[in-house]
Length: 290
Image 1 (cartoon, rainbow, N blue to C red):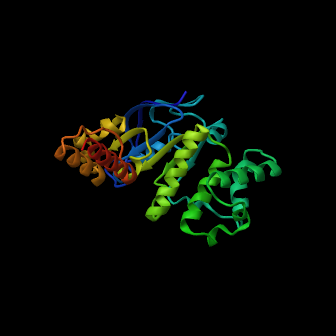
Image 2: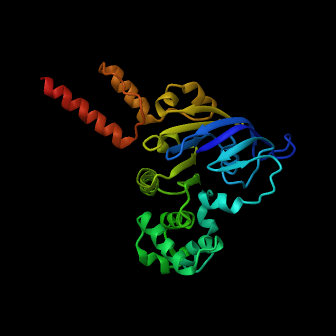
Image 3: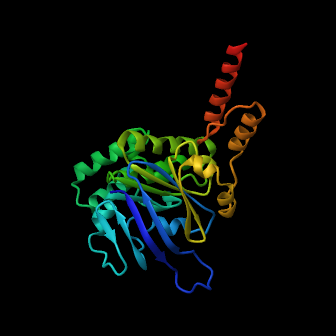
């Protein structure tokens, strides 16, 4: 079983006060083993949605089914430890969660709390950093002496060490430069494809998700106003506008390029690399006919 929201509502106290927006009658069914992007402007309900994934928040009405768990209003919280081991949540600016004097201690903290023996926790820490393309030597370094990109990966490794089935990340590329953002997203894609993990990426940047995500959810004013494929999303510019997003420049270019040269536009996600490959293939096809 994947992730199912059934008419979930959640509110943050007085609706007339400024603050985070809750959820309004959210119903979703997300498949396991997919790379999923949750999109929306600031305050759209994205973060509130993801905090229901591992029981940090419980629905006021409706229910949430995550793997073998069901979360309902008034649940006591018993058994949440098992859920949180299988659903890893990486908060925005996750490096703020680092607190130990070595990377190894930080990564081992979670497994040790789940009852894993120290030797196995260290082995899990090693596997976690290596899966993120980091050298084993980083385990003995102080996390606060690392670069921003390295700290972000270490923070993600602290969650990966528990080997979750679902990895949920809230704006993980915030403050990273373009190269670090791309590297991190490629690592997440590999975790999905090679290890079968469900990746849920929460972001307000459609353009960075397009080359990777297979499913999209758009949040607006606490409601899930869209759930579908990238091609379906790109055909709904009205929804993008309502959610405070634009069609990415690369996609707009592709649409104009295809229209100008009378080429069928192959609907689908296009990042810069895919765009370049497509133009080269069109050029080669055109020259082959000459």
